[in-house]
Length: 331
Image (cartoon, one colour):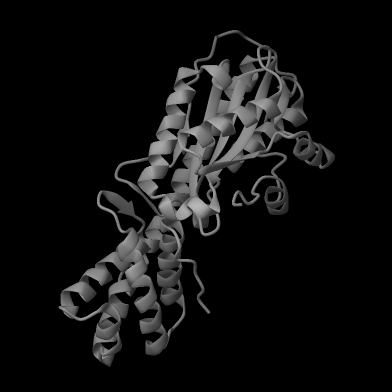
């Protein structure tokens, strides 16, 4: 049966999406349907915001909420919903079900966009790898402490991300000698709003990747005024786990080392996966993106590449990703 967390905005939006998706595929009796509406509508209204783009299923739910508000007058939500007749309940169901085709279009659009993002980002990372004898790759995940999630809206998240992007553009401090980056925004029930960040430094100028990752996390904590939390994927312990399984694609990566290069591309691939539809941003400020990459200009030197890099080889299994990269960032 449907279970959900309604304690913060990201979780509420996930709950609404899961409810509508469930209704499109499985029949709910009227009693259960009304029961869930009595819980979800008040929670949704608490976290509803102006100037926000909603995914198709949340948009459908919001339209249904408008119908409920228009019909209930001075009645409370529970009082109004529980006295509805069969035909009126059916009308609410149909309001949601009308969006099935739009939802399927949204899935196809997401997969196409993520595929394009992945091709573009892999080509971008390959250019950097080709241009430099060695690069230092750092991977951090940025999110929020569980106790602070109820205070974080999607607009807060994007404001914090914009501050991170400004630091990436300035390339000072822990971002000095940065060659490029990828930044993917996602949301989930337990993680809330969070970001996956891949940083590529000039390996001739930078070392101590674990230290740089910690510095980046400290920047995030400062930006979020202590509400944020970060996961350092470049600790010696984690890198040993990757290396033991032949998956080490972070830390110092050398040109001509084909396994290192392939694994580095797999780290890049993780940020843009068409299969991660359920982790997508369900809501976002109007006209905002969910994936960003830096600007890199090739220096034009010609190198002989002894080991061509294929973006299709050495793909990590789902278990590899779950074990090594997609760890919870909630405490």
